[in-house]
Amino acid sequence: MGRLLEVSELMSHPDDVPNRLARRKQKTRSALIAAAQSFIAEGKLNVPVLEITQAADVGMGSFYNHFTSKDELFDAALTEVLDAHGALLDELTKSLDDPAEAFACSFRLTGRLFRHRPQESRVLLSSGLSLLSSNRGVAPRARRDITEAVAAGRFHVDDLSVAMAVVGGALLGLGQLLHDEPERDVADTADRVTEHVLTVLGMSAGEAHRLCQLPLPDIDTLGQSGSAA
Image 1 (cartoon, rainbow, N blue to C red):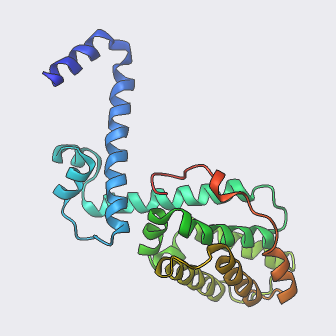
Image 2 (image 1 turned 180 degrees about the vertical axis):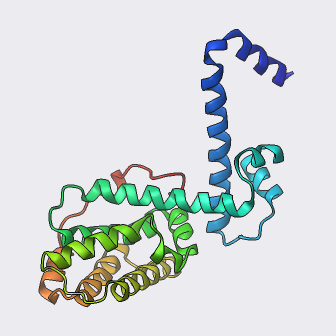
């Protein structure tokens, strides 16, 4: 009966049919991605497609209208988190002219987001070392800021790949530490780790400390980035 009413409604508004179908399709895809992100955050990477569709409250046929495999869905779920996180960092650092300050700001904010957006951060942590080589999310922005900071004389790095390995390892370690010790002060810990990273990149301890004392956007007023928060 519900299906007949739905068809009847579409027929009564024929001009809006393409928009309605597009919205419904997007809603289904978003539900599947959100379900996949939840499973990734829980470390359930071997979950069957049927369980994913049940969590998303969509039919099995709907799954294959959007994705050819579970791996493709999980890739899309991770990509969405990376893109949303990267877009957020771009928005929050766009007014900063100093690439070293932009890097420090991004690192400090990402550290705080590990605590304030636990599901999103678990998805990021689940990507592990692939996070470092991804062309989306925090990695390309870190490479950009480090390269520009070196050119500006703010950082002193002779091997960008080694620098990225250190930065990425520190970020993943910070995220895991904050998850393992929920009572730990996130702001103090994120800023101290950022200071260490800045000195590894060739900045003086005094300047690194100064950058990590600069005010950040209020984490509680940040808009939601994607479905994980």
